[in-house]
Image 1 (cartoon, rainbow, N blue to C red):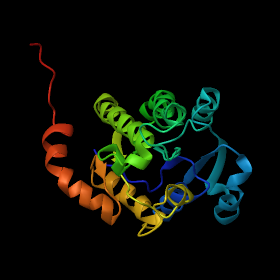
Image 2 (image 1 turned 90 degrees about the horizontal axis):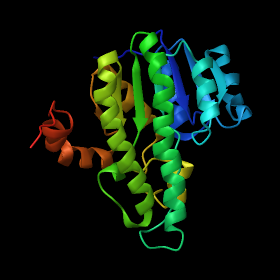
Image 3 (image 1 turned 180 degrees about the horizontal axis):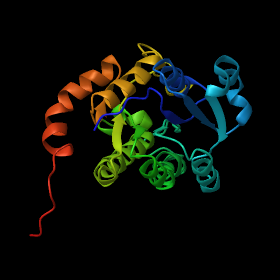
Image 4 (image 1 turned 180 degrees about the vertical axis):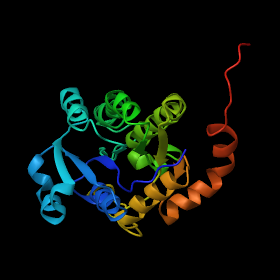
Length: 249
């Protein structure tokens, strides 16, 4: 499977800034006919509408609120591509005072939110011919950093779910891509102290659409991510992306 966004309809979560905004812009640059900008506050997408007109349709969306996800799936019933970019990050180590609170919040958004989104939109994508689902994971899904230990754990879990979605949704013709950025120049990266050497959000957007067109499951957008991806490639190809079957012992 491969996916070309030209003349297609996309749905991008967390679309108002940073990586999400770059994904919206790149989708339109590559010929998408419409992009649903999924945001918690509709007016946060006003600048996108001002720039692109009716090619951008703001939709209320909150990964912690299943009712908004279900409503968005009904509104975006014509969607061909879902990009789940939205997420949260806490700078918590494994034994900090706020560790349990942080991981509960991050799991709710980064993992349960992904599952809620996939459950709502998988039938929509199937009805529209299969399409594609993209999940923004992270290099920390395969390499934990202690100062963002809880975030790393949530992204490892979302990566695991993304692998399962790849296998599950293949039967309905839906391509799945797992994106693993390193430090990207966003407010989230600044908050986590990853500003130095951060790559532009456009690098993530380009990596997503290149992976879709080239039928690649993993996307490693920036120099740090590419270094991790190169080291991980052999395992990814021989284990993660293989058709290994469970066998009873």
